[in-house]
Length: 397
Image 1 (cartoon, rainbow, N blue to C red):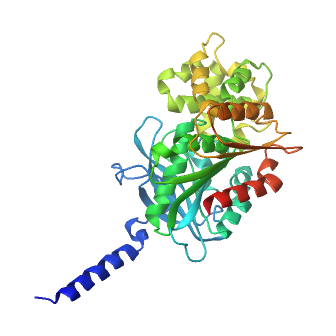
Image 2 (image 1 turned 30 degrees about the vertical axis):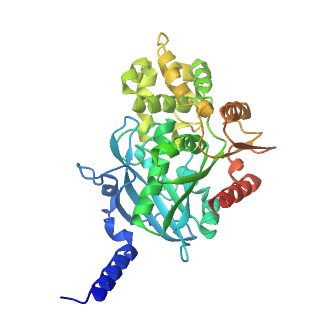
């Protein structure tokens, strides 16, 4: 019979080795090409946030300050409550992880489109959409240099099967949180202290993430959320769009609104609300990215938003569903920083003001910064970026 002290020592050493084993070994390598975005018919994993597979990221989404750049496919929960696969990227910092693991910034991207080819992780490295994917990299690299892991979801249905539920808050937030779980499953060096940050659509996602995190991912410690020019008061915007009789590129946004709600609530029968012209253009929301849909020479730009819908159509149910995805009435479980430009003509300051007031009435701790002569794009640079970097860094230490 072996000496008991030796048995105890061997057992202890084996347990220590098991704990030290890299978690990456538990996540299989994914296939090359577009096959990466198509999981097996029986979805691997057991719960939302489980990593399905990973592979090395080699396109223009690589972050210069990361030691490890990966594209990941992971389980999440659809807007209908079903298990789905969502794609995104994981970026781990250089150096040795601190005790408890690297804190994480989960980035929520701005509108890129609804078609799978518009997903940030699929960045083609050229064309107008490329700029939509990489403009924020300076800020993300700063967080990496500060010793934070960075993850970026593509969102539900963007890059993967199904239509993207554009501007449906719970769907966005689940993708933002579950990719953190996937990163932690890939590497034990990733901790559970998390901040979320996003711009425009991503700002909308950040606010919803702050509202659902405690219940949806209680294993994660969400320390704060940042929203650059967050989309809000969508019902008011949609009503204005749907009544406009002037041909404009904003018709593309009206069609994307409709497609997003259609993806989330097919029972509403959104296609039946469209005019003949609307039905003609509607498929383009799945085959073109935001840069094409809203360009001045697009088919949408030659059409008035009102003319996308049948003159006798009752849009009240559609508007009500858009209103359900307004962040104004949420109750937040973490502090929020909102950065807004006074010269923003995409997300009007008045709408952001109303959102902040509504959140504060419900007890939210909101730090609100309005910057003079800053528009929708430049709000993610300069002083607003510096403030967001410092605010997040302080909360993740």
